[in-house]
Length: 460
Ligand SMILES: Cc1cc2nc3c(=O)[nH]c(=O)nc-3n(C[C@H](O)[C@H](O)[C@H](O)COP(=O)(O)OP(=O)(O)OC[C@H]3O[C@@H](n4cnc5c(N)ncnc54)[C@H](O)[C@@H]3O)c2cc1C
Image 1: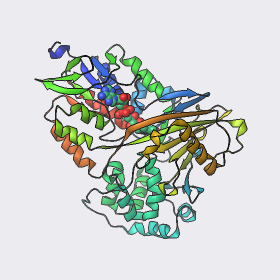
Image 2 (image 1 turned 180 degrees about the vertical axis):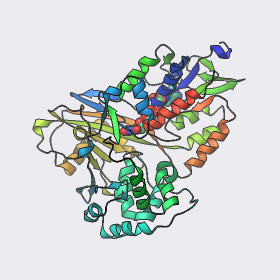
Image 3 (image 1 turned 60 degrees about the vertical axis):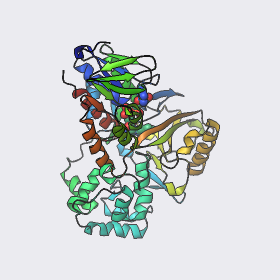
Image 4 (image 1 turned 135 degrees about the vertical axis):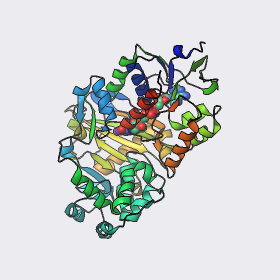
């Protein structure tokens, strides 16, 4: 093994979107790298499949357009022409309450009401909650509030029902998390800032809306016509000349002088610039012998396990029409499904005329046992929920399961403080970088940003 730093390629562990982004931004600067990925394919939780003539996303299905990193990368990959938006003109989401599907009132931004009349009319919330929502305008600014849970924060502003029927189901679709564990400062920092500045979240949101450019016509979420997997494929292609991909499991990381040594099953690789782009808990295991303190902090970042199930029907056998993006099931309603998307309503180019595709979410904090269920048991549970909730009692033509154990980071109360500690400890390890969803945001654009920053951190 050479120890000449000029001959040592950078090493990236983890070939999800974070690690791939690191490889991409190194390749863009003509810098060589080795990407180590234990799964047989790249992309991590981004997995696009073709099932019964439908395009099915097993993991994420879109990304937030307001964060620029994904759109920038897609543009550089030459895929800008494939970007599509969600069909926001027909955007409505239902929430299950006492067994009935009720639409989220218009003008609600997360759990913040911005329009009086639709909220006042909505059967989703009791009069007690509606009155509290009005009185929330009187909340006084809170300077230097300590971090607390999303549940406590929302309860303080709008009451318990707003946690159970708005915050909990809306967040479980994103984090698969428990609102009484998740940190307001890390998960909804915008709302924490609004509380500090305006007191009332409604006032803060309305002030933000007044400043926002008027109806740009752009949609909140974007994706790619041929699925997010097409971005992974394009990245793989673009790094090909610069990056050697090894499909094997990294086992541990140690240090020798200025070099990092990465132990693989049958060899040891050496580098000066190391990027660990795995989930934080896996990074913790890898770094255990290098620095137990860092490993402990990484191991303390919670992860939840979730699952998506694509249920595809022959449209001719289905009499129902679903005029919505889908529905969310609050924990209180005690079903197996946590959420369900009517894919043909949300995005074009996914479902042909002769099919109906329901993308169901299961699992998340407190409901993780479902990941261990065998397919027949799982199928019975999912179809039973679909029958009860939607009145749809037809055998599907396909039932496709994607399991994601410990994949979704949970930023719990105190997360920001742990990340600062982690950063301070990493100062002792030059050119060792962490990328991924465990630190500064779990969305695809956040992950791309962490990969890019880890690549840009290497100045040759
Ligand atoms: C079901 C689901 C739906 C989601 N929906 C959305 C959405 O719609 N929009 C959005 O923006 N975000 C969404 N997210 C979040 C987002 O997709 C993820 O946060 C992001 O893709 C994570 O990318 P990553 O590269 O950091 O991690 P991962 O995709 O988890 O990749 C990490 C990789 O590291 C590899 N690895 C781990 N340990 C080792 C080792 N020791 N050696 C070698 N390889 C190793 C793993 O095999 C894996 O491939 C969703 C996530 C899930 C699970």
